[in-house]
Length: 323
Ligand SMILES: [Zn+2]
Image 1 (cartoon, rainbow, N blue to C red):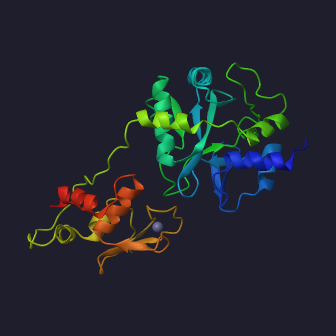
Image 2 (image 1 turned 90 degrees about the vertical axis):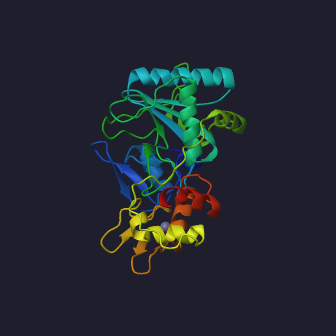
Image 3 (image 1 turned 60 degrees about the vertical axis):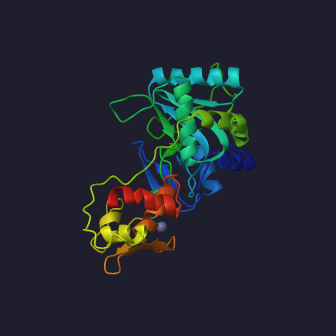
């Protein structure tokens, strides 16, 4: 078997969101991360069935170019098939169905979206088609990838790259159309098609996002032990800073070791680049080259959670619980 290298590059461009590392599937079906660049040769080997690679759902900056619904029960996969049919018929939106051993995946190739928008879009689609989203083991349903809004602390969720061999079953799974016929007769033709997939129109994405619920607000709600106030006539920002140490505040959000070090919540951190200096009462991240007070931390945190990260709104937010 041989594949056209250009088609393989195109296929890679369709699915791969980051090249600096990749997940590889083990015989038991789980994945381990390989901290090496993902090359087209490796992807070629994946398509040949020599190894099985996963695709991370987000790029290092947190953007997604596809959305994948995962149903691991046939009943839910049938729901995805109905959704694919309805999207094609009523909205002219192309989707790609990939059945598996049980259930299967439904892929949508979208205009590039920030992770949280990709998730809002996916959740709203499920709601529109009255399909259940999976929540843990208690609430069975369909899983949505990307699973996270942002790629930290790690690279986040991944999906097995299609057309390779599933390590657990030893099978290769082909794509089908919403009416159940093969997307193309040979794997070679399927790769060609996926190298240039039909994309979801931007107007459709906008229309769905306009109806999706707004992102949930994040507010500091932890039960902080605040220090007594000494100077109530000082500016609001100074009063906030006098009420709690950077360590006490930040340690509610970032797991810190004895030296005050931890994984930075603001970038994809593998090296504990983040530290709180207890003597100096400030935090910093060596990689992001950021740092400062409680207010600076909360500004970044709000920004990372798609909230208004202006100084004014951040101070207002903190004043609510610290003053
Ligand atoms: Zn950082």
